[in-house]
Length: 334
Image (tube, rainbow, N blue to C red):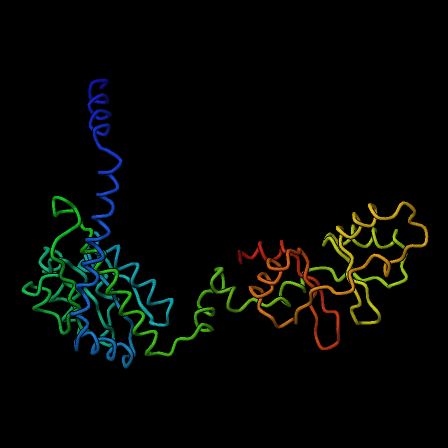
């Protein structure tokens, strides 16, 4: 065991940093070239597939085996998130009952590099028998899958990035890229908007950037306020009580200033005698304010640029509330 460990360490010690970097660069260059090689395959079949999916009433079923099955799952996730109802079906499970999920109105995309694996050879004719449109995303145009398919997404690559030309690398990268090309084309054809994206991603930070408003956050917080002639003691109590690090100075419902915990520290440095000081004497009369219907991500940018931690929220009546930097960070908007 010790000898094996020594040999293992010796083997890697012979690999220079330069050779490791070169291997990484060569892999990325090979995969980039493979993706660029797909450009010539964006053809009439590709356009017909987009048109059939847009016009169809069923789902897009994506299937594959091995590494292609993993790519199939990612393509399904991308299609679903961009407005094309899709489902994943593992090629092996398909011949053990999952074929029952396929309806005649569905469109099936079967992914395979060779198009000739035993599972795909069995599955392809069965998919045809289901009556669904069969699309082959395949790297061998003379394969059984290509022969059975109604339409083809050609993902042919010259070779794998793997030095043994065995491990799926450039081939799976090509499949993934072709899936993205299909998803984006469908997205544009559907006129899928940023608002649609937000509707499908309400729980994620991407969606929140598109729909979350400052009013949604301000409503969760207290709405501290104090009059201009309030004593400093009352100002400090108001700031401490509401845990927002600030209190708003108001005249009725109108904002005339803000006092933060930073203003309190500056007051203590400036004044030796606090007798007679009021809120008006220590407030910032030009606080940063934003309308309640403003997106939270915009508020975050204003807070960041202004180097502040609180932002006042207004509506048609005046003072609506406060949003704190921590509210925005909690929502994952950073």
